[in-house]
Every structure is written in C-alpha cells, then in structure tokens.
Length: 263
Image 1 (cartoon, rainbow, N blue to C red):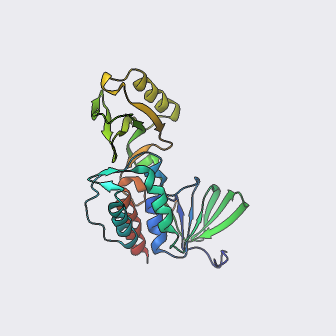
Image 2 (tube, rainbow, N blue to C red):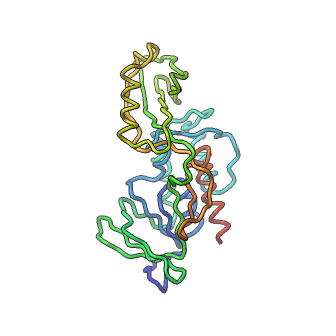
Image 3 (cartoon, rainbow, N blue to C red):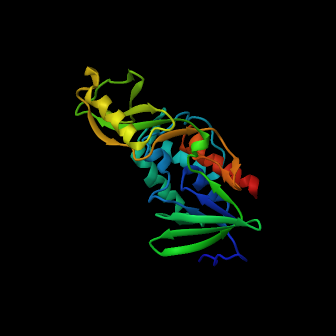
C-alpha cells in the first residue's frame, strides 16, 4: 500500500521518464514516483531501435547488473548484437520487484517550486491529480544537452544477406538473428519528425542495389539520441538524461549511482 502523498508527506523524488536511468533511480529510492507519458519503460532504447554498445563492460549496481546478466544469459545480447524487442518485456518483469510507484500514460500539466517543495499537477485516465516531491529528476533526452540523434528502422530479408555498410552516411548493421538488420539515419539535432520520415523514405526509395532484397519492417517511434552526461540543474530540476550512456545497462547503472549519492 502506498502512503498518501501530501505537502506534509511528499515524495523524496519524482522521476520524469520511465527510462533505464529512471528505473535505476526508482530501484534505490523507495519513496519516489515515476511519471511516464508513454505506456512502456525503457522506450528510449527499445522504441528507438537502438541497443547500444560496450555490453562487455562490468556493471556493479544491483538492478543494472541483474539486467545485464539476464540479457547475456537469455541471449538477448551477444557481442553487442541485440534482439531489441526483448528489452521492454525483460525490464517490465524486473520492475515488478520494485516498490516505487509508476504512473504510465501520464501528462504533466504544470509544476511549481515553492519553499523547497515541488507541487506537480498531472493528468491521466484517473483524472487530474496533484503530487508533492522534494526533488525532480528528468531522465528524458534534454534538447539543451543533445549531442546527436538518429532515426532508426528495422529491416528484414526472406534469406540472410550481407548488407552491412555505410550508404552515403547512413548505416546498415546486422542484428542478433539472421535476416534482421537495423538502418540508422543521422539527423541534425533540431530535425522534426516529418523531416526525419521524409529522409527515411527518400533513402529507401533510392536505396543501393545491395539493399533491394530487404524489406522495411518498422521505423522507430523515438529518436536514438546521444546527450552529454548529467547532472545539470535548470529551474531547480535535475537533468540526468538516460541517453548519455553506451547501453541500457549503463544507463540504469547511472541512475542507481546517482540515487546512492542522494541517500
């Protein structure tokens, strides 16, 4: 059962974004709440069709270490090749053991910082609600901290091909399983969604002969972003973007480490 939140009994932390970093924060700080606009955790990697790199580096914090080991044990990751659709189901299963409250499909209407306390107004299927928290950490990709971003898509072929390579600045790489490929299109930081989709379709329409036998299966619903590491503070909110790290496990580890420093 959750304790009733109020000015007299505020959350220690409100986390913006059920990202891997956000989940890491939530694992360490029990008296916290995670507010997520979407319907799934770990979207910044999974919905961007980006699995990251350097999965062989040692992860030391508890939840992140468990996540990394589960990915390796279940063959979700093998030598930096990753089966991206498995990320969200695995993360969701692991979050069942966390006492922190998660609110998905939730919009933040407004917030005020008065007398060292945040008053946050949110809206979701339950209606409009007011929450109080001592701190807010935003783990989403902050535009002010963005270094680069990409628009990724999943490709497949009826038979295994060898299309890996660079195509006028766009890259194609083989996924974990045969006939599974990822197309990555680099974008300027301020590229809009319509512009990104136009770039993808223009490339695909005029694609190289080596890619003619491949099919475009799906395109990302999130940009694959790279931000500079936090924390930074803007308007009393701590910015700790999850996309500042090499892979989901490292992002989760960063959240756990930051939370340990807060305790």
